[in-house]
Length: 330
Ligand code: UT7
Image (cartoon, rainbow, N blue to C red; front, top):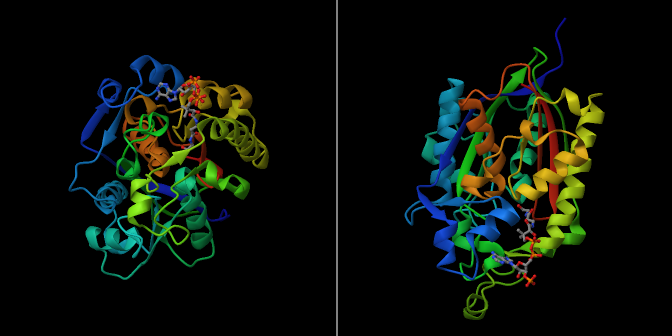
């Protein structure tokens, strides 16, 4: 008997930006300390891309690796979904540059998706619909951010948190029972300005004044986002389990957005899944927004942390505020 079609991740890849910015480096730039950053966030260092590297370069590298891992070519892709809030340009989509850079000449649909830190899981869910309805067979999903270009390195509330990087996955349809079991996407539009870049869009076009007022940088009400992150991530994780008739003990591995160790710890306790089951790399990369989950996933796949048949929970939350959960049978 043929099982229902599910999307399965058949290859992963990532790009780690070359520069390493440590807490000690930041101590020389803003009024902060290694102790404060480690205690309040769990971050020791984050990556910063070199000046001549663009978002699309990092994305193309990660997607190229994912295609290699899957044993597929660029022209096998029917679609490229690029989750990012730090695109190469406002126009055109970074995904179009990625298509060019990986050498896909088949004119596959290529678009960006702005769901901030939840971008990769939003992309996974969109890919699921296209593949299940037969409108695509093979899709590349990328999470990529070049946040160092939109950070104010004089604002200690934000500059210590974020880093650059990219992660990608290639998905195809599978009828063996493996793959994505469910996904849930949410947005709370009442919290739009708790994490945002005020300037540069149609609300506040770029001007000398917006530059002088630092309005092209990330602004965040950290405490407010923290509170909602714990609540919304926990409820989305529980929903993923309930939907599939599973409990916390059934989960083998959690690949969660790496924003703050204290958030992960609080969610772990609320959902009753021990932190040992979480893939953790925040210490080395900080918060890479949409790249966070696919980078952690790629590392876990490559170092053998994940075995076939494992039940994997994914959760992410970021600007919007948008959040998501997914449950997979690896
Ligand atoms: O990925 C998207 C989602 N983003 C998140 O999930 C981030 C959520 N928020 C957070 O992770 C945390 O709120 C932060 C790490 C951003 C801040 O931690 P906190 O424990 O909420 O600190 P706070 O904002 O309440 O600040 C506590 C104190 C303040 O000083 P006073 O007012 O008590 O004197 C801050 O000014 O810590 C001060 N502070 C710092 N001190 C040293 C804030 N940033 C720093 C810093 N170094 N970098």
